[in-house]
Image (cartoon, rainbow, N blue to C red; front, side, top):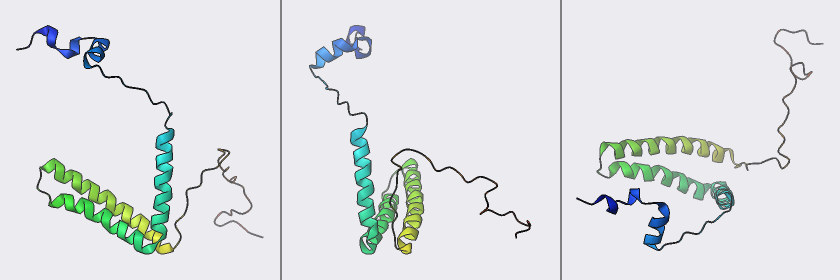
Length: 135
């Protein structure tokens, strides 16, 4: 049994860092790296799914990967996780295949000024109520 002085969780963090002789530098980017990675993945997916052959290949692979996890012998938790991954992959495949079938993969547009569109007023002349007299 270890002595209490040997337990690391009782030592102050400064003593632990001196003991390990490791230094960690902070990389402060405020999430810019993650944002750029997400934008890059979005641009790459637009290029992939704009081409029918490559997009279909990726859709098939996204269904085969979780299906392969079901074939690997593992515990019940692993199997349920694979079923969950397969279910979400099938939903994503249905949505992306419908967009690909339409022929045009839309781009995500973010308004540059950050303003949202105002909803049309209830009494708008373009909207008519059911059963109202139109002249």
